[in-house]
Structures are given as structure tokens and as C-alpha cells.
Length: 339
Ligand SMILES: *[C@@H]1O[C@H](CO)[C@@H](O)[C@H](O)[C@H]1NC(C)=O
Ligand SMILES: *[C@@H]1O[C@H](CO)[C@@H](O)[C@H](O)[C@H]1NC(C)=O
Ligand SMILES: *[C@@H]1O[C@H](CO)[C@@H](O)[C@H](O)[C@H]1NC(C)=O
Image (tube, rainbow, N blue to C red; front, side, top):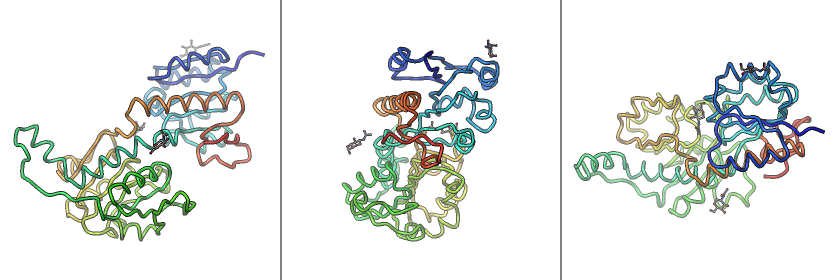
């Protein structure tokens, strides 16, 4: 029997040796740079006829474009596994994959700590209104116009989306003396709550001093925070987003920030990144980072290893370690090894 074929799409920064080692049992193909047109041509002219699964990443989207309906329908019949590097996978059309019985995995877990670290950096940066003094210092004006920030202690942190990242955020915030409330599609098992209180979405909006977004972007959650929801928040609320920019209607957020209803924001993600709303750029109560959530050596490496592991166990055993949640329990879906 010939070796199964697997394909690497886009770059692999930290684990190329581990990929090469897979050559002992697979035929390795690579499409590290190129265009969508060439990729589709490879799908159609037989180059990928034996491919069983691929490694792709958010970064490889710039090589192939999104894994949308058009691209998924061009994949050869043999292709059963897409191992995606990223906790978010909005550039993979999972429904189109499910229709073709192609299993998709993502990298939850590996990103939790690094993303929550950035969440706390944003939370403190926003509470302390650190942006203006950072600029002043570099301009030789020391503190600039001195202003007072706020302590996290005794404040209520409202977490929207209590998955791994939300819980890592809660874990850190507790050590700053914050009270934690959360809203999620369903209540967590109490053993995972660690004292965090489950509340309705409206209660979360009404009670949070700091509101942190830690949920996935999909059709139901796009613009989940817009003008009507902002109107239900406390005056002076601080909003932190490390998840996806389009969870928030950015123009509505800018209005609420300019009116002072929202006192500060800490954002790592933007609705049309890398473009940023000019109202955020010019507002010195906006503490902004350019999507650094998982940008650490340790985390990038962990993520790559997890993707390779998903690909390997997919091809070898017909399972995936971290199948995307939309596919769990589908009658054709591979089982989940564990996670
Ligand atoms: C398939 O198309 C690609 C991209 O145009 C090309 O590089 C490759 O040589 C083609 N392969 C075959 C077998 O025709
Ligand atoms: C992933 O890619 C999308 C678009 O391709 C982009 O909007 C998003 O910022 C990227 N996320 C990361 C973590 O690079
Ligand atoms: C995240 O940090 C916790 C300690 O706070 C640790 O137990 C856990 O293993 C870490 N998770 C990952 C994926 O590194």
C-alpha cells in the first residue's frame, strides 16, 4: 500500500523538522507560497489527487484565499481532513466542509493562556488609560497631562463566552480581586466556574464594570455588541476584546466612547483589520494592540504541534484531537480522540 499524501499550505515557522519527520510515513507535498489560482489548478489537474489532509493556517489564507465554498468544492475526493492552525476559523466554511464530509480541526486550548495574558494587558492598559502617558513619555513630556486610572480590585468583570480563554481570563482577574460574572450559550459545570456567577446576557451588560469578549465569531455573534447592547451597559464601562473585531459594531463603539458612556477600551482585534476606525485611532482612551493575542514563541510552537498532531491522527486513525464544535456529533464525523 502506498503512503498517504498530506499537504502543507503556507508557512510553518517553528516545527518544520516535525513536519519533515512525518515524511517517514507520508508523502509530503507543500504549497508554501503561490496564488489561489495555482492552488485551484493543482486541485483540478491531478497534482492533489491523492491528498488525504492538509495543514493550513490563518496566515495561509493570504496564499490560497479563504477556504470557502468555491475552494472546498474544488478539493479532490480523497481529501478528508483540514487541520487548521488558529483558535478562530472564520476563514474556513465549515458547513461546506461538512457537506463534503471533510473534518476540520482548530487549536483551542493552546491559545488560551497567551490570549488571556493579552486580555489582562488590555484590561489594565484601559483601566489605567496608559495610552496617553506612553505617547507623552516618548515625546519627552514625561506623564503629559496627568490623569488617574482605576483599580481592577472590587470591580466586576463580565465575560462573554466562557470557553478556555474566558476561563483563563477569569483565573487571572481573580488574582486582581475582581468579581467574575459570565454569560455563555449554556452554564458551565460548577466545577469549572470557580466562583464565577452565571448571568443572562442582559444582566451581564447591566452589571459589568469591565466587559471582556471571549467568544467565537459566527453569523449569530457578529455585532453582538452594537448600539442597543452598549445602551444597556453601565455608564463608564470598559470594553476589552481579544476575540474578533466583528463581534463589535466598531462605529457604535466609537460613538459610545466619544459620548463617554464607554470610559475606555482595550482592543487587540478590529472589525476590518488591519484597518482601524479613525475614531479609535484618535481617542486616547483607546488602548490598542495589533492582534498580538497568540504572538509568543511558546504558543506559536504549541499551536503548530497541535495542528500536525491533528493531521497525523486524522490520517492514521480517522479521529481528530480538536474537531471544530460545529462538527461534533454529526453522524459522519470522526470521533474526537480527546482534547
Ligand atoms: C497543475 O497546475 C499547476 C499550476 O498551474 C502547475 O504548476 C502544474 O505543473 C500542473 N500539473 C499538472 C500535472 O498538470
Ligand atoms: C486571520 O485572518 C483574517 C482574514 O484572513 C484576519 O482578519 C485575522 O486578523 C487573522 N487573525 C490572526 C490571528 O492573524
Ligand atoms: C495555562 O496555564 C495553566 C496555569 O495557569 C497551566 O496549568 C496550563 O497547562 C496552561 N495551558 C497551556 C495550554 O499551556
